[in-house]
Image (cartoon, rainbow over all chains, first blue to last red; front, side, top):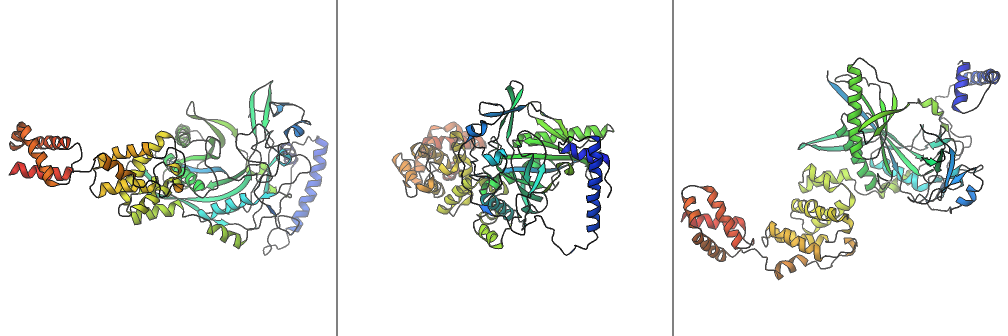
Length: 95
Length: 496
């Protein structure tokens, strides 16, 4: 699988990572190396193996449906850059 | 050209848990801004999500109710996008192995007196967390963020594109709305956003088996808007295609004031969200025992009950649909029939007629109906055994309603209370029908003697005159005569 420089830039943009032309080229080489490795691994027949979704072979523990948190808004908002009327203020975003 | 509209719906049902899907913060609606946003919901560094058993159980309940496959293991994934009301920079959702896969919803559609059944297949239903709310009003050119809703559990229910008109889409949404409330997984409050619809709409030439390019219409928070938005959108697409244009895949927003849809953003394709399994959450295992346990707790489903009402009680599809609109109505109705098993249709007419109308008028629901099923059943029994006419019964009903318990207490807690109310009103006001035929005959004689003109006219062949005479007798009896009996006696006397 070949990755283009544009692919790298697009993914960087989606992930909101600012990346210079130089860094993009470096990332392209590194990512391509990873893809090559994946390609090599794909030669192995895995048809009888269930895909693994987590590195640990244990299952999710569940918690009971109960409210255990208290209102700590003041504490949390004490470190926020700007708050008003209980709201966190952020630069205006409208789609 | 003949166009066909193709519709698929995505419904977000907010699950009725006490706490959030991955944190112990409350989900109660209407709290002060950010008072219910804990460290996990705010995505503060170092926090980890812990899955709520109640949310999973509700998803299983839904899966069983629609005949779907419940996946085990089921996997949680990160859906990445950036918006200030999503502090983590990703939404925890499901991509591969959603908790519910497949299944179907059966619809009954009654339109212009015609009854129609239809199956809508489901693709999947997956668990995910809701985002917060952005307020764009005046905060000195900034946006205000309220994260109370962040982390609220949602079940996103995705249908196949099986619907062919806005009427079918609304019927599907309503059936689903009834179902999620019926099985107790969602309160269905559309104003508060507990049940939200997005519609995928495309058009194609009738007979084609290829799907056209679709547009997704977001946030339709009422059934009426859903219908209007789909109709508008289908017309818009047909006009473009008939003018030789092509449809661009995009997300559109319905504007209820103008009754139209407008472009919101071009549709990101799935890769743009860069889904991947969330390393913070292990695979979810749902044991066969757990599924069995949930299955045991399921009530009779609305669809099963509809079929039973039609088959066992001989009700029409329309009646069965109305009586299963929610569990409060169906339970009340069943309790009335329990007291008067000989006439389910009469019970249905009164439950959907007078009782519904009086409750609506007072903005109350069936679970706090002031008249108990036993009280209503006694009134209906008195119609059936000829003690009172249907007309008098409505008057008695009005008085019963006024006298019954005005407090909002469930009728289930009022068993045995004043069950003789109807008889007491009928007796105390002498409302019993005059069934004694000699008494009726006397009335008829009096009326005939007082109305020689009508008698003449009837004898000259005017049937109208007969009806006038019946009316006179009924009036003389102050409504308490049995009309059929009056007819019979009157005709006999006139032809003697």
